[in-house]
Every structure is written in structure tokens, then in C-alpha cells.
Length: 211
Image (cartoon, rainbow, N blue to C red; front, side, top):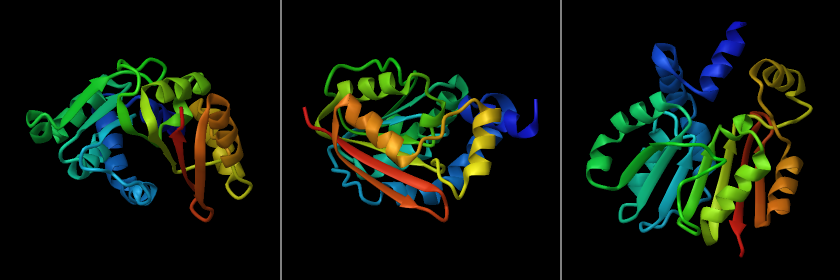
């Protein structure tokens, strides 16, 4: 397995000592991306929020600072990420402001219309059956709740060679903005707003559950 394939595999499901290094690097390297991705989101202090693919738990921590009277849940496919995220957010967990658990986007263990906001930072590339995952997210989102996708890569001519290499060796799917919009519309999301930073290949996609 090539070095890039090993790294992408660790991004998919970080484990062990190498995974911990990858997660710590992601916490740092994704900070500016996440700041930009969340800058249009109005996080009410009473919000109930789910961060899917929470990794090392930094985004959960940042959201919990804003939702001071609500609660933020972090979910990750990797058991090790769950442990590292718990370590980072221990104080907030003790105060019942944060909860971290293992799970997948295909089957999220919450009742219908639980969350005001659901975030997915640098994770949808790795989801199997993405339409089914979007349907599950819509199920647990409140009416007029917001779903936000924040990606460091989207399909574009400018980054075509790099992104296709990542897709090939990492068994991942990099979507164009048009592809994402069509998928979300097909599931029934509305008020879809997509912003791009073309020079960085960054994408932010916000949408609402209308009914």
C-alpha cells in the first residue's frame, strides 16, 4: 500500500498511534477550513447539534462553546476517535454539554427531528450509499433545521488530477457542487446554498429540512 493510500485509510478510520497523529494534524489543519465553513451558521445557545465524523473532537468543542445551554453530540466510525474526542471534551462531557459515541451515518441512533444543526466536516467522501446517509440525516433533523457539509475538496477542473488520484487510491468519492445539490434535492432538502473557494478547492454546502 502506498503512503498516500495509508494516510487516506487513516483519514477514513483513524486507529492506533498513526491514527492519533493524523487526527491531531487534522484538528490543526482543518481549523481554518472549519472556521470558514461555520461562519454563516447561526448557532443558537439552545441548539442541539450533531457533528458526524467528529474525529479528534475539536469541532464539537468549538460548537459547544456557542451552544452553551444546548448539547453537542459527536459521532465517529472509529472507536479510537471516540476515545480521543472524549479525552479532548472531558470537562464538557462531565457538564452534560457534550456526548461522544461510535456510529455511522447510515444508521444514526436518535429519534426523528432531534437536532437543530448537523455538521459533516471532511467526511462525506467516505460514506457508502450517500443518498441513504442524507435521508437518515434528514430524518433526525428538525423542521427548518440546518445540515452543513464542509469539504476541503470538490470535483473541479483546476484540481482534477490531484482529486482523481485521491479517489483512486483512497476508495473515496469527491463530489462536484452540482452533484451534491442534486443529491440533496432528491432527498428533499431545500434552501440549498453552496459556496466555493476555487483557489483552495474548498466547499461549503448548507441546506434546510423544510418538511
